[in-house]
Image (tube, rainbow, N blue to C red):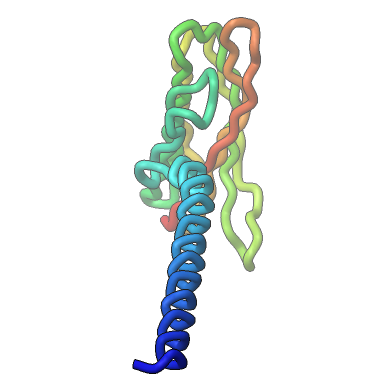
Length: 158
């Protein structure tokens, strides 16, 4: 083997080592970025369409459940807000809207409150037709003198 061939082999090996380092550094950067972003993305999801509130979403609130059904022109909307142990007051407003022409249009709203850790409400709205509806709940859950603002919604094709 000549000296020239030996030098070419050494440069080739050095080039491969640099390439391996670059690939490993790129993989490490991807792992760091996806690891940091992966946790919030995973926590942003819900267990199913009718139930919200992963454990870390709110401080005072354990669970929000919303549901809607359409029967003979009447939408029955129900919702429940469950505070964590020590909750002293829940005060919320439910709003029902219908998707019309790409925008939500007001249909009905009502309020509910409770001086315990559970606040439930059901309401029938008459003269409704099939379509996509959005039921929103917004208000506060009070525990240890902190009135935590909450908001959640359910979009459902009825």
